[in-house]
Image (cartoon, rainbow, N blue to C red; front, side, top):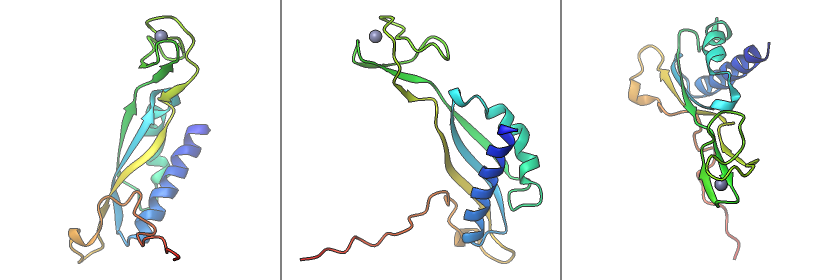
Length: 141
Ligand SMILES: [Zn+2]
């Protein structure tokens, strides 16, 4: 089941971050998902099962759906097609194969519950993509 695979990989990814940051568990997961992926509802459905017995168990999943936009090279403008899978410019009817948004699936942030005894401010709440390397690149003379 495709959606279950996606839900499981999402849970794995979030659990990995939560473990690395020393969280007791995950409270909230914020995702951006393009409308073309068409799986937001299935993901809500599969998530509790995928999250069972992990740090993500009981977490709230929030999915922000990203609308479909395409680039019309004829109008030279960003357009929103009248319907999904209708890749034509709504104004001039020109085919618009270049999809700008609507296909993405992106982890925006996760809310973490700190371990027993720790203060909430001890944990970064926005742990989805912490800077891996904030040192400036070494410059050679
Ligand atoms: Zn157009």
